[in-house]
Amino acid sequence: MTQPVPSARLLAHAGRQQLRLFAAALMAANLLLPVGLILYAHATDRDYATLFWGERNAVTWFSSLQLLFIALVAYANHETIGLLRRLELDDTSARRWLWLLFTAGFVFLALDERFEFHEYLRDEVLRPRDLFVVPFLRKSDVSMYFYLLVGLALGWLLLGELRARRLSLGLFALGVGVAVASVLIDTLDKSLTRQLPFPNFWTSVFEEVGELWAQMFFAMSFLVLLDDRLTRLTGSPASEA
Image 1 (cartoon, helix red, strand yellow):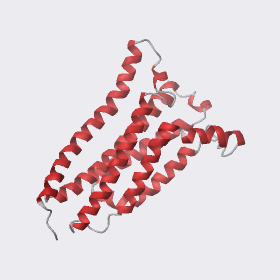
Image 2: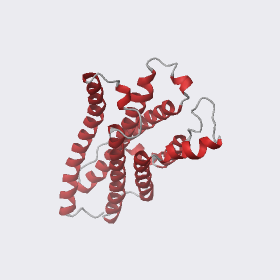
Image 3: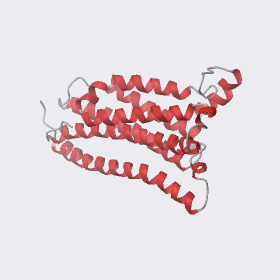
Image 4: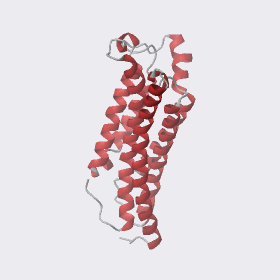
């Protein structure tokens, strides 16, 4: 087994420190943004829900950036696997090509969040033709379920790597759970959501913040795996968490 060269070990050590800063900043931003918007609505006597509705607001802007950040972390995992293999420090179970799919997938989601691809498909293509009309869901609002199924399939392929780090697996599972709940609330027919207590909260704050927090959990899960790989480059023993 090849030992990491000193420069690689130095970069890996610095990288691990940066990962911890990124993780802390990510958690703070995902907490402070919704809280700040609600406090702003209260201070200006506005309906807080209006600050979360729609696709062109601060939440959507931040969501697009966060999705791009997840894509960057996925690509960093892809490249780090390659480096570890060149140094003969990585087992062969990691699917390097899978991380490229995750990278491309999160870049697409970031673009979709910014340019509203699935909303256009729903409103301009499916709904006028009465396609994919599903009971209890908003008319033709099925695109997000397709995204969800693709994501679950990719997550299943990643399961071997996730199981090696229990923390990463737990964070990924949290991301899936929150994403499913957010998609369900987002796509339920209004006749059902109106029956919920505080319906504006569920269809605005919960749905939008749920998306952000699902993204945060996925990012943290990928950061844990990246930290594990950088740990191998430093020559330090990896945590079992």
